[in-house]
Image 1 (cartoon, rainbow, N blue to C red):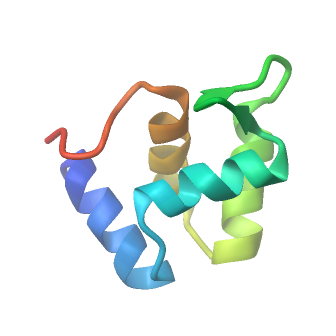
Image 2 (cartoon, helix red, strand yellow):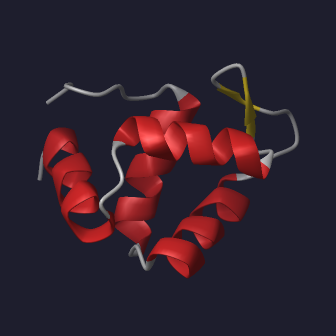
Image 3 (cartoon, helix red, strand yellow):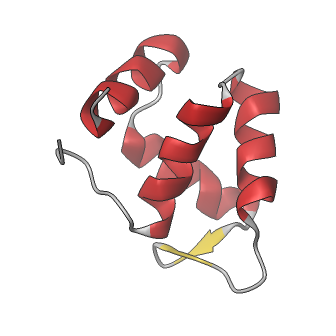
Length: 76
């Protein structure tokens, strides 16, 4: 599955766009100015995504990758 397919599936399941997750992560205190804050662990973010949005581990990791800058929207 391509990264974009993960993002599309996440939007279909949650109604949230990648930008929505970026905004929510900042409000939750996980990110600042578009970057994950020092000391924030992947597990904290993936647990939040699983609990609040019902995402599976792979989809939560896709959002983590987006937040960490490892992938960006539109990358196949």
